[in-house]
Length: 215
Ligand code: ATP
Image (cartoon, rainbow, N blue to C red; front, side, top):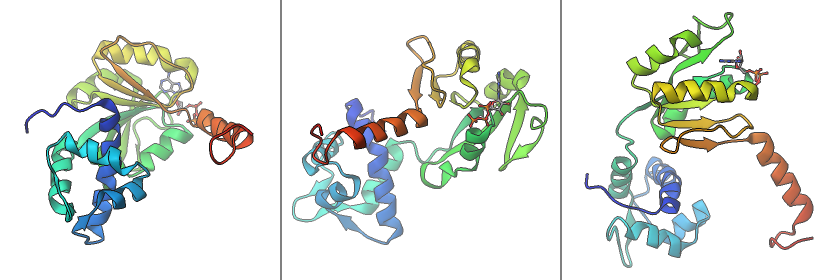
């Protein structure tokens, strides 16, 4: 498929669009309008139309968009016809929950290997995923061609593990620890700090009115 250059903000919205298209497809809908999509994903329809315009004229005026062909288009664009293996490091409470979470159902992502230092769980299979010792990290990531890692270890170990991952040559980290890890600029880190998100939500509820203005 020809490379499509799209703005980052658009790229971030694509999985949202994709999920909604899948929902429409599962409910046997064949068409939708940008207004339908806008209502479902809470993105204004002008933005949606502009996002879609980066991929060429995908909709017809007065007809809307065709679910089947857009779904196929997004599937290719998001590489959803290819299964992406990712690894998880740290199978504690959060790690377990992530192992149980079925990424594959909607996103074609699979956690295919997990790693931990706890000898009580290494060598076992949890939720269908083998848990390896940390000593096996390099070999397994290389063998399975994994270059994305989910980090759910205690924060005091996040940097040392990240350094090891960088040496191994991974490309992306989804960091669930509350610290910001240092990486070379070619490596991408996305941070998910659940406690912080919840705290921020509480702060907003306490300090802002529904229209976004200060209380
Ligand atoms: P959480 O909810 O954050 O997962 P938890 O109390 O279940 O918390 P933590 O102490 O945060 O557990 O540890 C998470 C997991 O990370 C545990 O399974 C632990 O054995 C593992 N772990 C700790 N240190 C390391 C390390 N250096 N390398 C790999 N795994 C580690």
